[in-house]
Image (cartoon, rainbow, N blue to C red; front, side, top):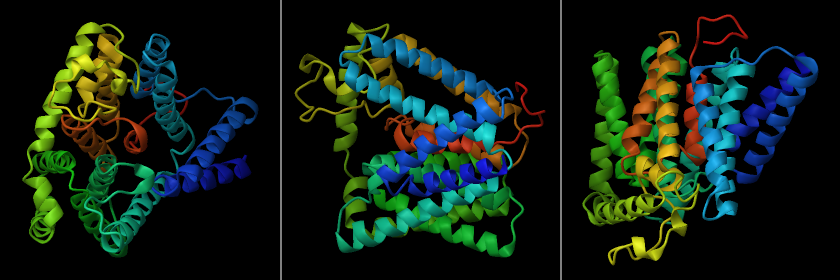
Length: 373
């Protein structure tokens, strides 16, 4: 059994480090981790699974996705979207069942791997290739990169503030926080910056101590310097064109929802909706609504939107039941970030959904193992 646990730890470390770096390695390590988990549960450890309210919310959300996929406009595309839900659901289930006593390992792997990815992105994407927006290739488009970075920043912020750290670890996390913040700013994603500011304000209201104010001040200083020094950031920050485009995209999504109100058009099928829904102002088709809520209404209908609300409620209920420490606060702040950012970006999918589920799985509970809580 100890060898299996060791193997699980190795696979998890590889998965977490490859999450922002390598699509192939990430997929292989994830599949092996799931395989080892199933073998261990079927053959060696037949204890009942730990089930949280969020587990139930994820199962309801996944079941809804299965129903919607069956009636989707493009079943092949919808299956890809369903696979995305399966991934982050399995990540959460595996972590809460197998890694409850290895949370420090998960935390530092997530923070270090993301910081290294930002360093890589700043050196190659910005300095050598002179790209206008920072993208980390395995995280995708700069908006998706920014969402992932924002979630890791929120968690790092909370760990700095409320964990009992040595001076060496505290200094290291301060460096990571600064680098991650610089990376987020250079993605030039205004929605993620808004989401992060909202999360930091939530933490400021939650606990008004000097560290919160100091870290918030660091974030504002970095943002101001980035605005003054980066012409790309200035152009993006002062450009209202993308906001207007989003409004027209939302309008198209709501028109499609009106014609497919119950089950929507299917997962990942926003780009398949009819041309008649688009106005003359939308020049390029998009594959999502750039809004978490409208995207669910369009792609999953009322049924999927209700499943999303249940999922959010179950996440909130899970965090509420958890022990009061920095992990609980980080989970609340991450949920705030997902919802506020979700006004202008489609959050809760791909790697940033996995990042959120990792943070959600880290919360601590005063429970006996194998029980429902």
